[in-house]
Image (cartoon, rainbow, N blue to C red; front, side):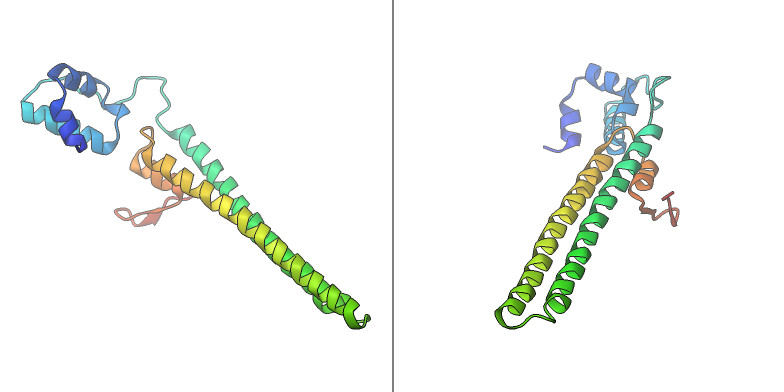
Length: 169
């Protein structure tokens, strides 16, 4: 059952109450409610403005932007850990065993390789955590009823096709 069918099954009173708080619904939801009102030829007090004092997205956008900065920082830290592991492992593998001989030298080289692999794995997990945070934020921003499409695009640093410009700060 899609959203339009759900609203077709609502009573006239439920539809009128929804129209009075239209600002609480997503853009798609508002269109469906208005279309159903029109289909039934119902008169209702339609309110698209949020009540006075209700934050309609300004601070929400700021919170989302801050959260995206944290997520991007976590991804960056993961990448830095991978690079650091490669550098440390290379120092051990290439430089640490130059004055040693035999199995000791092989042990130092092997240790350097293992250090690089360990750091790489940790860096991958840290980066993955940041990317999961980004994906979670994408879902939260996309489904937030408190944001307009322009605010969503701004919070996600996306380009709005109709405007042809980036909205990132």
